[in-house]
Image 1: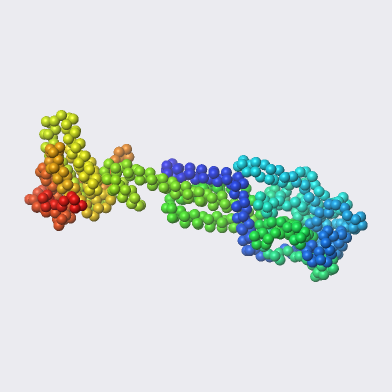
Image 2: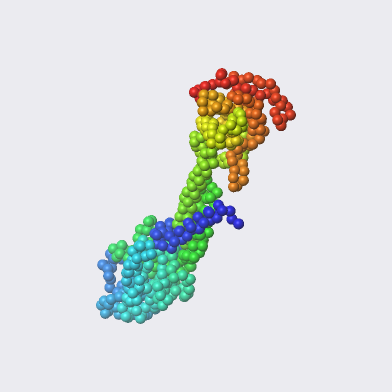
Length: 589
């Protein structure tokens, strides 16, 4: 069986885990998590080296626009490019250009002819989408683009003469960045995937409907050449031999630029380069997969339970150290899973769990300390003054309810002739007079910082030196005794004298008893000896043992009585009497 405290922390960890799971399944953390993914992907790209030699990008760049003229160009230039690439040995050609409206019949006829003769060109089409606004479970209004079912194809001749077709649409996340490719329909294939399939002659069956694109930071990862240079034949021999060639705009004025995970270091990226990255991922099997949501939920709950139990055993400072270490471990795991296994593991929910469990742990610890202080307040309020209680509950790292051996000074105070007095009085009078005596005694004990141990009928046991250290416990005991004797002597409502026995020595002090009832008390020979000494004292007398005498002999006038053998002792012991007239006045305290 688990201990109650462990069950309490397990419950706390479970609740925290469930809350974070709900947050994880909502869109609340999406942008922050995606940002963390961007930096992890960037770190991966810095570690990885190499290049993609099978893909060549023919750029419609500033040089091309200056050489050929303002965009859009005559389609005869594209026909010439296909012919040149075909002669140069290109294996597959893809145009990141949507030829969706007819132009001059001659130039359209020329391009259509080259498409048919080459049988190497893959053309794109566009899925027409519609934007919908929806209210999520969290009260957030979100816009989503969905395929309307309509398709914008190239013109008819191009559509049928091309080798294959693929849709050009790229999915943007909520922050506007392109990070993934989505398979919208089983019968429709993304443009870049279709190019990769035709080039590799492989038809890969991906296990997910969405794949994260593994972008590369290296500027020279892909080979590239200007459109005009290809037309002019200005390229090395074998440059296009057996290559997959992508044709697209890289000139910023043509506005085919999108935001990617590396926009914070590379700025916007041309669409043709994003398609090149997708093709590269296909050829190298380097797409990044999302971890299954059910797996994430399982690990979140498990992690929450584990951190809750760990934090419950640590101090706040230790908890902060573990929190920092957990941050490092979580981030390292996120980077490692991306680097070695091509898996995107969310890290923000795990970081959130670490923070929440530490906060909850500290709050629970605070309430435990508060409950402990209240418990000590209730426990010691019967024995100690408020000032002493405050000192006790604020002393750190110590449970004063556990037994410990320490030096204390014990007093026994008794009313003389109370038995015969009570026989002559009514029960109401007896209780009344007893309460008056006990009230005076209690007030004085608390005033001098003593611990009220117990009532013994018409007597009281008091000790000094516990639960807090009092180096002058012997002195305090004598001053309390003198004050009590003076008050009894000078109060006409207190007709009976009191006798006091005091002894100093080591005793075991602590909360002694059962789980149902216990008292904070002292036990040991010093207690028994103090009780025996009080039994020898007469009315108005203060008798002390050897231990107390050694502590206070230079502060008070002391008279040595004859050595006596106390009950239960084998050897004689000196008993001393405190002379009241020469003692310190209580005003000197």
